[in-house]
Amino acid sequence: MGTSSPWFSKAPRTGGGVRLFCFPFAGGSAVTYLPWQELVGPRLEVRSAVLPARGARMSEPPARDLDELVGHLAGAVAGLADRPFALFGHSLGALVAFEVARALRRWGGPAPESLWVSGAEGPQTRSVRHQLHDLPEPELIEALREYNGTPAELLADPEMMELLLPGLRADFAMDERYTYRQEPPLDLPVHLLLGDQDPYVDAERARGWARESTRPVREYRFAGDHFFIHPHRAAIAALLAAELTVPVGPWSRP
Image 1: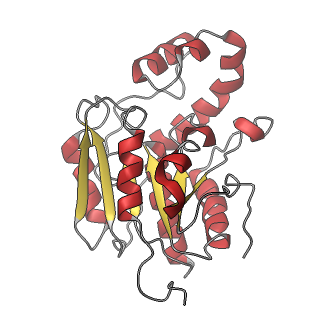
Image 2 (image 1 turned 180 degrees about the vertical axis):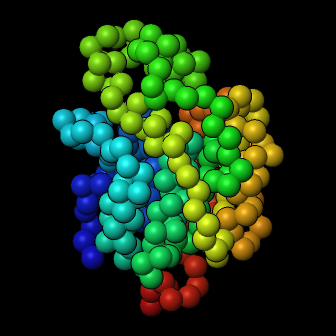
């Protein structure tokens, strides 16, 4: 197993312990999670997914097939699973993290210690109430403004939006076209993070994540809208650092 992959950010100098793989929301990038390393301290190593059509991979075409994307990411996770690891995803990233965990199980690969799903309804209970991927550009930009997840200066920059919108459309299409496939529940802890004023996530539908695990789902509520993870990143990082410790078992090192 190596320590690097084009699909994940480089290993930080200060990170250690459990490796936390983070998956971005639609249109998000690795930059979203990079500041978390300083917040979680040396107990965790934060590795953020580096996806096509953004950041260092801006020149590549965006991923349009969720199964194909999950295959690449699950393979990369398996190649970096030389220590205990967990998966974290927000919004679309929660679905991706979930499907990565299921892909690893289908392959007989290493299993995460836990799955952290944020700002997302359960895969079986979710309701797609807005079709954004095929909106005309002005309407899509206005929808992004309402989501409150894209900086206003980017939305006002036509050149930047010309670069970013193809990836955003592809991400929204993967999210809106997602089809759940029946598989047994995962045998691992699931942690659910929700914003108490999120207009895009129904709390009862979000509790549908309980169908995906043989264990009770732990729920955490934060004040805020769909992007509560931004103002509460310090609290979320503290929660992750407290919960993710090296377990006693086959992963233990002498």
